[in-house]
Amino acid sequence: MASIAVRYCTRTGHSKQLAESVAAALGLEAKSIDDGLDEPVDQLYLCNGMYASTLDRDLKDFLERSGKDAGEIINVCSSASGRSTRKALLKLADAYGFTLSGREFCCKGAFHFLAKGHPDEEDLRAAANFAVLTAKRR
Ligand SMILES: Cc1cc2nc3c(=O)[nH]c(=O)nc-3n(C[C@H](O)[C@H](O)[C@H](O)COP(=O)(O)O)c2cc1C
Image 1: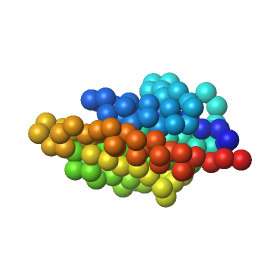
Image 2: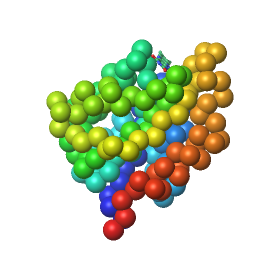
Image 3: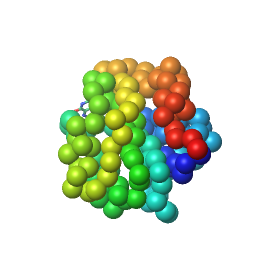
């Protein structure tokens, strides 16, 4: 299997849940973006949420530091609306020199009275299946 890492940036825990599901499916450990990439990887599963229609500031900083160390970044995200953070990530891709995979996983994530209960068991299972299907294998 190619070298793969799983990182998450979270405010309310959903991205960590998704990262743990993805990592377990790939036999890896999910780590916070506080843990930088020790070495370049072929694929980086980046689990994140949407805040005020954009990305967390810490995630942007991580991408500036480490985005270029990933052959491709695979977006795994959640938001109350179910909208993807892809647009915000794409805005940074050129500036920070990383490649965003065309494939991504996105599900709903609870916020106040919206999307209650998400990500749920089915969302986490779907994220794991997505990871198995998209992980590069030699
Ligand atoms: C401060 C804040 C702002 C948010 N803004 C949006 C938003 O603009 N659009 C949306 O769809 N969801 C929004 N959400 C919902 C989050 O994207 C959703 O709860 C996501 O699952 C959070 O992931 P996390 O638990 O990893 O932080 C917001 C949540 C928070 C806490």
